[in-house]
Length: 243
Image 1: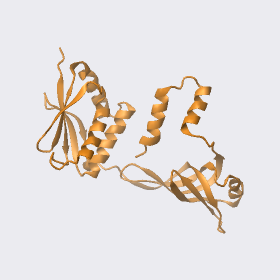
Image 2: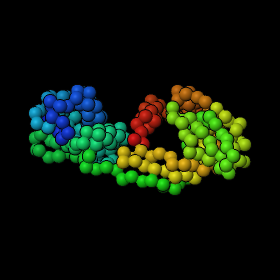
Image 3: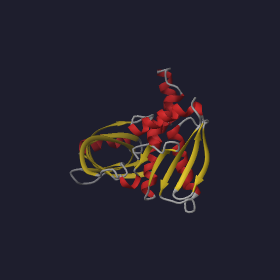
């Protein structure tokens, strides 16, 4: 019969005496998402040395927790667990550390978190057709390529350009949300986040002015199959992230 099992999450970045409580809470939140079965996984203690978080998994949930952890290790686990895994590695890179989830009974490593030892490759100047959304706040200039200024999620984007013919049509959308299409250069930093180098705009389309709730209501009216699961996944993609 399967028994309750203990696992250790060892963080080689702090000791229990130096680990800030808020930082520990961040790690534990992500670990809970990776393991799942939240009602069956319990905090036990923190052991001395490097920070070792001991937690107990109730016997009925052990097979499910193991299967979920194995899928995360393989890279094909549930989307929320994979996001949590990436988040742990980002925290570890910030803390100059690594971590491992270990089976206390066998001593076997279940998931390794490379953290500082594995930085993502950076790319600059990747040429690719793409699109960017934002509110048009300014169009103008006397150059051959006319600069466009957008406001997107509180940031100002100034590295978009278009020909006069496009600028004339785009002018009717001043202070309105649009999606710009064109050929551009894109950069990816060591955290895996992509950013726009510049975009040569050749077309655009106006966007609806509506909240996320309004958009979901509109989609639900068209497709009754949409439910809370779709909404949760959409919210996670919006706020979880290329980061």
